[in-house]
Image 1 (tube, rainbow, N blue to C red):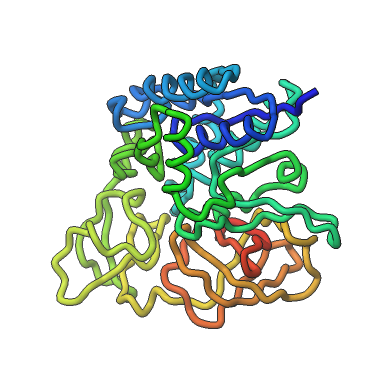
Image 2 (cartoon, one colour):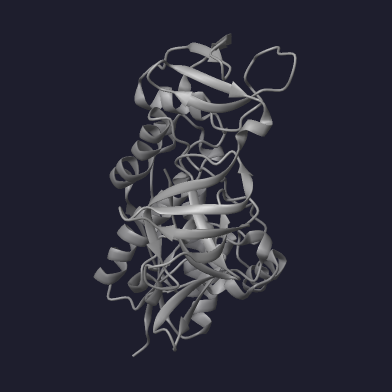
Length: 358
């Protein structure tokens, strides 16, 4: 009896090729597209967002060509609660979230993972660029960077548990070039072989988070003062949700020297600005930490740490505090470390673990 795999099908080329590769390995594959929202719910025309009818039809076409069963699962309520509501709340409390992490954590590797078990599937398969290995000596599954460094997505998968890693497959992890993936799609004659890659934040395709939050929540966020570190008023901001730490563009101020968002003062509805040099710090504290490469360490460990998806890794020490939080101390100060973002620790190409910057 063939092993069964549940394939998360977005309608894009990556998940389609992942499905083909699993079929080649002899798996009985079932394709599922997660319907996460209606495009009118987010105020966007269909062609600008994901979960569109064309995405579903592309996924259905690929599954038909591969002889796979295919389903569309409605996860709109879960997505609204677990991703969009968290996204809005984070901005309201002054943080800058990464909703792609929440989507992977609470949708693909929670709801879809549960669906896979219901279908008696041995593994869940996605088109992520990352790798999973098993360390015989440690008796642990390891999450590793993709062979395609430019496309590596291990940063957004740091939350994965040993059980999830044991039942997940990333077939594209060993591909070092996206063109190799497209070549497989063209070999199979997939309609989406040359389809463009998806948006970073699918439900805010125009990138205007402030407008999205106001329209979706029905709330308004009052203007207030821009101030410098001494409390001098520099101008008026348009609502705290519209700014993030380190931001310079879009402040709408004419100042004698460049100024950047240093902090957000929720109590007084103020955005505090500073020079760029004030943005650098050598410490951060992380909560909700998940250790992958080994159990929680009882002494400081040497790591390379990444504080944003596109940030460069930096050498640091990581130490678990008595309250369970993890303190990261960098060798060199880092720019604009931001509450709500993830900090992910690496040892070479192995993900040590990660958590949320507090």
